[in-house]
Each structure stands twice: as C-alpha cells, then as structure tokens.
Amino acid sequence: MKKRLLTMILVFAMVMGLAGCGTKNNSKIEISMYLWDKNMTRELTPWLEKKFPDIEFTFVSGFNSMDYYSYLNDHGELPDIITCRRFSLNDAAHLSNQLMDLSETKLVGTFYDSYIENNRETSGAIRWLPMCAEVDGLMANKDLFDKYNIPLPTNYQEFVAAMKKFEDNGVQGFMTDFGADYTCLEIMQGCAIPELKSLEGTTWRSKYESEKKDGEVGLDDKVWPTVFKKFDQFIKDIGITSEMMTDEFSEIVQKFNKGEIAVMRATANDCVYSRNTSGQNTVMLPYFGETSEDNWILTYPVLQTAVNKKVEEDKEKEEAVLKVLEAMYSEKGQQCLSSGNAVLSYNKNVDIEINDALSNVKDCIDSNHMYMRLASTEIFAISKDVAGKMIKGEYGPEEAYQDFNTQLTTVGEVETPEVIIKQKKSYSYGLGEHGNPASSSVLNTLRKGTDKQIAIGFWNVATSSVFKGDYTQQKLLWLFTFKAFTKEAQYTGEDIISIMEWLVNKNENGNNPIRHKNFIPVTSGMEYSMKDNGDGTYTLDQVTINGKAIDKKATYSVLLVGEDDCITNDIYCGCPMPENLKAKYQDTSDDYRVVFVNAVKKCGQFQEPSDYVTIEK
Image: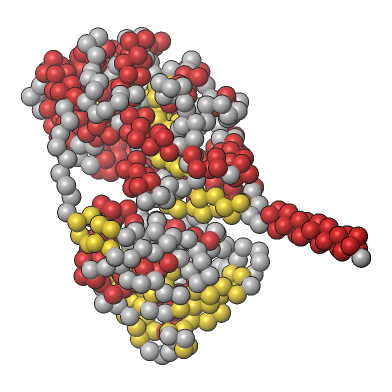
C-alpha cells in the first residue's frame, strides 16, 4: 500500500512538474522597449514581433532625453531596452549603475573599434550601443553648379571660391539655420574634425565624457583654440550673417529647392527628401579640409540603445533581450530601422546600400573619415550661444574660446520648478483585463478638464504609470505621449461607432490599425468591447455608456487625442480616417501640451481609471 501510494505521489509530482514546464514554455517572455521616436514603429517593431513570436513586447514612444529616463528610473520604471538619440556619455553617466555592461557580449565585437570606443567608460564598461549613422554635411544643388559652370569643390579653398562665384552671379552661395543649436554644434565641430580626431582631441574627449561631476573638465589649450580659429575663418570666408540666426530650417529648404541657395548644412536624409520633392539633383558634400584627403563627414547615431541591469536577474529574459539586440543590429534590423533612409552602419559586415545622394562623399566613407559628433546637452546649448556671438561680431576666436570654457566649467544654480499638482494616488502602466489604468487616468483627466462628454485616444496616451507625488510641468509632459494632438467634434452615436470601427477593425485595404497592443484605443466617458480574432486583428463588438448601448441618434461633444499620422500614413498603419468623420472635427487652437497641462490644473488630480475595454477571446 505504501509502495503504491509512493508511486502515485511520484507520478503526480512528475505530471505537475511537466505541467509547470509546459506553462513556462507556453508563456511569453515580456520585454518593454521605449522608442525615442515613432519612426521606429514603421518597419522595425512589426519585424521584431514577427521574428520573436515567443516574446510579448511593450513598445512605448517615449522621449529623446536622458532626463526622461532618469525620471522613470527614480520611480523604478526603467524599461528593459532603452533608446535615445540626443546622447553623450557625459549626459548618461548618472544612469550608468542602472544599466548592463555589454562589453563582453558578442554584439560589441561587431562594431568598428573607432566608433564603439566613443562609448567605453573609464572602467572599460560599454553600456550604450550606437545604431546607424545619420550623415551630416553640406547639401549642394548640383544643378546650380552645372548651370553656372562651377565645379563641385574638393577642398576648403575650392569651396570658398565656389561660394564667391555664386555670389558674383547673384545667387546665395551658402545659407543655413544658425538659430538651431544642432547646426551651431555640427558646423563648429565640422570645421575642425582633423583636430578633434587627433590624439590630443580624442584624449580630451575621453576626459570630458568621463568627468565625475559637472564642470570638472574644461576645454584643452591645444585642440579647441584651433576649433574656434577655423570656425571664425569659416564665418568670414563664407560671409555668415546674423540673418542666418533667425531663418527657420524649413524656410531655408524652400529657398534651396527653388534654386535660390547653392549649399546649406543638412543631413543625407534631407538631401534625399529634397531630391524627391524638388526634382533637383542634390548631393552631399563633406566638411572640407585643406586637401581632399582632409575631408570628413560628421555622423551621429540614429539612436543609442542600452539595457536595464535588472534584466540580468532573469537569465532567460537576459538571453531574450540580447537576441533582440542582435536582431536590431543585424543587416535586416538596421534596414528596417532606416526604412530606406540614407544612413551608414557602425557595424562590420552590415551592408546598407549607399544612397546615391552620398556619391560625392563615398571617398570619406571608404577611408573611414566618419567623425561621430560630441553632443552633450551643455555642449549643444553653449555652442549656440557662443556661435551666435561670433556671427554677430561680438567675439573673435580667443574670446569665444574663453567664454565657451567658462560656461563649460561653471555650474549654474538650478531653479526649483513649480509644483503644479501633488498627486495622491498612483495608477499602473500596462494593458490589463480592461485596459491601461495609467492611460485611462490621463484620458479621464483630459475629458473632465476640457468639459467633454467622450474622449477617444487613437492609441496609448500615457508613457508611464501615474506616480504618486509632486508633478512639475516637465513631469506632466513626460507622462503625456509626444504629439498627442487634440481635436474637438460634435459626433452622433453612430459616428462614434464608426470611429471605433476605424480604430479597431481590419481596414478595407487589408491593413490593421492595431499593429501591436499599444495601439489598442483608449476611451473615456464610454466603454467598448472587441473580439480578439487570434491572428493579430480585432473586431469591434459594441460601444456602451455606463453599460448601455450608445444612442446612435444622440449628439455628443467628443475630444479626439492622438497623432493621425500614426494611424493613417501608409508607412505606419495605413488606415485612413473616413472622410465624413474627418470633416466634422476641428483642431484645438491651443498647443496639445497646453490643453493637457490646463486640464490637469483644472482637475487638481489625475482622475481614477475606468474599465474602458473588454477583449473577448
């Protein structure tokens, strides 16, 4: 009897053990990935979901800011995979202890040493990986060069001479937007890349990027004086005027496309776009040196990626995350990320076809004359300030060097921002049984604060949990999805059902508005149910208000929240809004961020979330 009982216990234990293993194998590994821009949802995120069916991804369009990730980290919500564009080791240093060291992974070995070394900390750790090179340089209208029989320059003196010939012919030789911090930063560095890439230049950069506290490392006295001398010479040789500090980039592009400007600072993607829209033969030129062998192109990563250190606590998850990163940095992954844009790769054995717009800088690419810009937040701001003073004639190169160095080494007082609300309750982020509590709370607050009966968010309107505690304006804006434009309308109940069908059902053209779960619409003042078709698509079932079917004939004041482009554009979901519904709404006159902040102020607290959706299997 005892033997039989023992056998039954063993059999039961084996069955339960197998059942447990089966449950683990059948459950998906959950990975959260924050995107620096919605462009990553064009081809990359759908490709990753298809490639890794055993992974449950949460993709969130966050913000291009290290401060944003610090904010999430302060509340224990740092995502598994982080992406950011505006980056320097200097800015990212405070997050270092929260991120995985990737230096021993095989993925790091796929990078060209000269680029990955820019991200190596003094400890030897590498926590950030650069993805794809955006190419920055001088965009030239070759048709204008041909028209005036001016050859494309191959060095700095030829470039100066070409700009003078255009001026003699009544054409603006060079013009660009020095009112933008990135333009000041890039041209200032572009004028002296050989010096910045020298041993002295790279040694200084390493010290600056790894400084222990703000203001600890100033400019060196060998490389940087030359940077300012060359930039000052560029201002004088090309005839840079204060007018270039007020013209907007879009205005300059329009003049360029009309043939009124021969050369401007731009990226290779700007060059391709200009070709496609104006029909002119535009090409990229490098930042010129004394000889053609001294020419360089300036590059910066389309984004940088890092991994939350907590991922290491789960080996299965860690392996999955590293596989996702390897896929992202593969040839196919980088092609999906670039979506046909003119980019280069920092990785060996990754062949991204060089766009024809880069034909004139191919020698720089082949000789690896690709400089990765220095782009800390403070360098951006100081570059704009000092460059502006040089262009206005207030500073010569020596004064510019001294002021830049003073600003770099002076730590200013940080003003304490005003607290707008003290939130008493927290609401979690993530799709639950009846929706995303944080997104529901945000939309309920917007609806109440704008005095609307119903609010509909095209997709997730929040980027994190609603946290308990003080909210400044910046923290409020970090909670609200970027470009969540607001529109007002008077819709009938029948119109509202049509809107929900547009946002849920597979479109007539075969496209799916809910490409992944973050695209499940959020509602306030009403509920809806939909059927999960099991193939990644959904079908709307019913729309209700307080559990009762919406009155099709009644008229409701409605707030629409979200960026149309994400749903309607072919490169995203490709599901255009029905014209009869589009004709009935009007854009809110105020900035969408102003609408949100004012709504929060009016409510005084984020509202309780609602059970706004039921998903039937």
